[in-house]
Length: 637
Image (tube, rainbow, N blue to C red):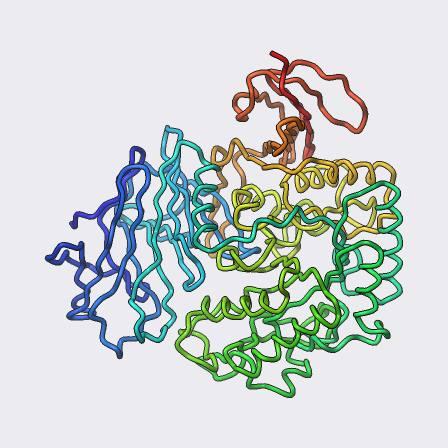
């Protein structure tokens, strides 16, 4: 057993081993001043060294490979701690918008099971408060995985850097720093890690809060110039009449014929796109467009003319089809398969540069929603053949998005289906969950529901206004054409609005009922601030495994609590308590438990005037999927 270990007041990680290409090696320490592990017999002269700094509550370490032969194929390397003590819960953090983040009680993992996450995790101890956050500090070169496994002898925690057969040259085989923070708080510990990442990657966080209108969740791909202008007129009239602070007016997918043909426009837009964007601007809005820059449809003109511009499968030599639609649903397009634009090809890179240059400087787009961004970061050299070898998947992706930022200048940029961490310093805003859809829940895993919003906004909220603005997805306001009850629609609108991130809707404002318009006006009126989840980590999710099936994620505690604290000390604090479960519940929360003053003055908001009273605790009885919003101010001393 070797000597390097991570030991805090709460937990211990010990018995470190090197991991090469996914294989854990039984290595022995080497002699020398720097802690090292021999890689023999896999690599006879190879050594992994581990550099460690700090002690106690704040530490960091990084690992490096030395004496690796040039002809050794390296896909990944890392370390595994084979012994863990006093760990109750593991935060599984996804790597892009749609793959989810959630807390898992480690005992739920069966022997032989594994939970793979990315970039950062948080370990919560048994019978104690506090947490330990462990995460990499930079994400612009490598994809970085964090995996919890359970064997016959117990649990192990693995940290891996995906080298992706990167060209060695003068590059050291060196990981980024792995930061270890032991803190008493749960959410604020994650915020502290996010601040380290923001500093290392120059996060763009000076943009004022984004609000506005997007065409997708009402019109989907069924759009034309006339319909868009009808919504523009209604939005402008309501915004002016109600004095709503809506900034952006954005056309989503549906105006281009195929993915990849980004300079072509459907005949449903006979004047082209520039005149429309000019009208958006004249109406007082920031004009926006949707694009999926890494996607190439197999029926696109781009693919027909340039089949060498897409990423190939190493095993077959054929294009990697990351998405396939062989049945009815095809986004109103002809393509059955969607390939990945190979931006290491200089001509493909130049084409994409031209697209963003035209959209920004000729068409006048000032707000870009880029979708399916994970297409460009999903595959390394073990699976994919790129035109230019020797770069990691993240280097390729980052080089592309930095070019996009160069072309669009200071235009607003929302990343969707996007790597959460590699995008820091490039995008202004980030979708933090899947499409919210028009269902509360469903049995089909393919149907978009509110469940991703309820889960992922909770666990990814810590990055809001530190790494990027968090986008909870569009807020559904209409009274019809969905499968939500009035209670559910109200709850989801308030829950998303409490995020203090993007506040956008797709609905025809002129068709909203008075009650829904009042709800939208209320949400848009809230002062800018920080949303806290004071009970984060106390109510983990369970992973129910069934033979031959993927685990089903369920919450042990159905009630979520949000606290929106404004930057302005004179503005009110808002508390939203949401019962996500299917049965009525009763709960009592002392204000001190929520991180607030012991006594405040306030009332429950129900759309009508309510008289303020002194409040020391909030007591609620909530029906299924019902929420309760409270508005609080400091009590006079």
